[in-house]
Length: 113
Length: 110
Image 1: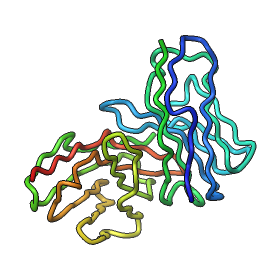
Image 2: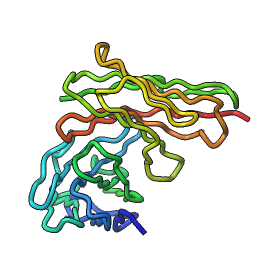
Image 3: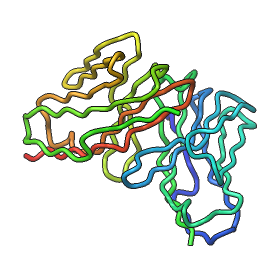
């Protein structure tokens, strides 16, 4: 089954404790992206990647890191999480560039206390 | 960077009526405009998209129109059904950078 998976689905952590949210897709998509969703703000792009070893900042990259060492994986790293990073995070992937349908993962609800 | 504004933020219609959601964008170089539907507790899913070389696209009860000169695009849903109730997001893409609107919560009353 074609899908995008994220782990963990729920995470409660404390300020400053490094964490990684994994994202994996099995559709051989070149384009992968991370978004955060906050009430009243819609979806905001954090980082995106056109292919292996190619990543670019989106709208709100501050406080986040990403890597794309393999085509199927695109982890999101929070080196020192802060309470303002409490949010619902979605990973997405698409064929080619970003101008094709993006398939979203199930979401990761992160709470930073 | 690109800025996408979406209106209204909430919309309530009677079953069978039409619903229209409008978005404006700021960057004339944006060239791809998708619409996503997000049901409560679910992930966003693409319902329709349009590219900058097309003025209108239709898929059954859903249509999207694009006015490049005015930099706005709209989602039209006809003959609404209760299962159309969800949050709808518009987006604009420029150079692989996707910007979303804040969303419209559509409620279809039976």
